[in-house]
Image (cartoon, rainbow, N blue to C red; front, top):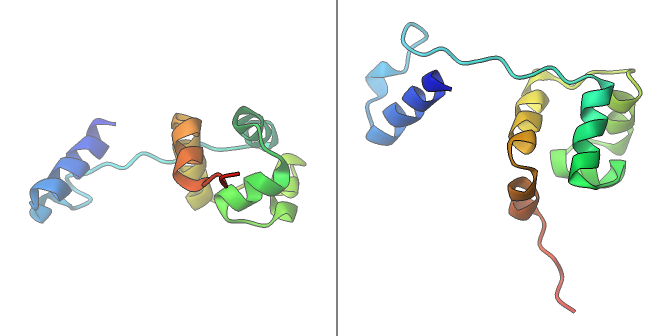
Length: 100
């Protein structure tokens, strides 16, 4: 996290000379197996179809993740990490409830 904060601070301050692989270490995303994907979806309280829309993939792919047939790609794992960090904030950023 300290490395990511350093990267963030460098970007915000406009000091792009610091942004090299020699000065910044970026952590790998978590790995998500079938049980972790399913647990995160349940934590959000959504169906596979809604979860698929939230992460911009097909419902079939979500079913394959949860069935252990396929694993989420690293870029998807980064997104899942962000969702796991604050599920409510993620939902609020995407869902616009229709007024009655």
